[in-house]
Length: 298
Ligand code: NAP
Image 1 (cartoon, rainbow, N blue to C red):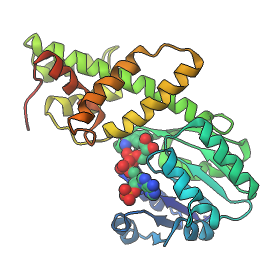
Image 2: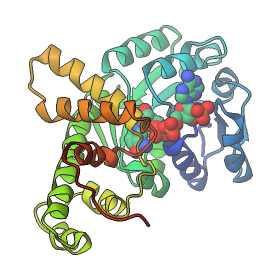
Image 3: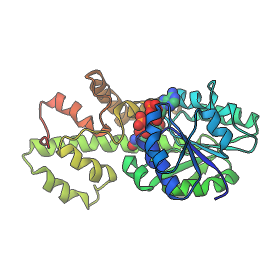
Image 4: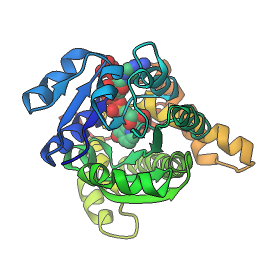
């Protein structure tokens, strides 16, 4: 394959995505702030870079998947940032979920160096990242989207070019409105089922294949029943996305009642030290309100 690819941010999502780039045959460089997380990738054939700048210097296409807007800014514009090593004509593909407005500013900063940027946030959870079945919503120039397509196709199954720089991040916020309201619905439904004395597994089985079926129900429903709160997607990161939704909705004058309710429910879990648990743990906030407990341990 012609273009050299680098990957920055080997967390829950990035590690699976980077492995899939290797499997697709890309000559891959990796960098992660916590160096030990690079080891499994290096064992699988990737080359470790010393800094984002060195990685960008070696690569034509740099993929980023880190936590929040300031983190993308740090790896791109910091002292050892991508911008120090990037060449004219190179491409940055940002798969993190961050501010649409600041994404546009970052694209302009890179353009001053003759480099291109696509925002390409993803959906599909840790499972989708590991299996290469993510949905990817892409903002940026058509030509760069075509160029990035082999990279995106190695990580995702549904890739949609939705508009210019920042549009991918806007669509991701739409995605998050749907995800969060789904988690709230899951919480209410399982609590209701528990209080009504139903067998939760049978209830899940009965509703999963009908009009109420969803990714969240099939993947996170069983986790709720087993009280397995390990994160596919951490509450702390979910809150970051909700903040972006609430800010934009305020600007647009759009009511987002489910999102604001969920934001405050998640906040109560964060203040009880549960910010590192998965976003399906939203049901625990409803348990505290009702004094009803769902499912059983292990
Ligand atoms: P994660 O497991 O917490 O990983 C975060 C990654 O970002 C780690 O590699 C971390 O490095 C790195 N990082 C954070 N701040 C950094 C900084 N200032 N400088 C350098 N590296 C930094 O999170 P994740 O679940 O993979 O999520 C990553 C992104 O994907 C987020 O924007 C999230 O919203 C989005 N996303 C997640 C999911 C999901 O289901 N998990 C789904 C769709 C989208 P260290 O290892 O050194 O901490």
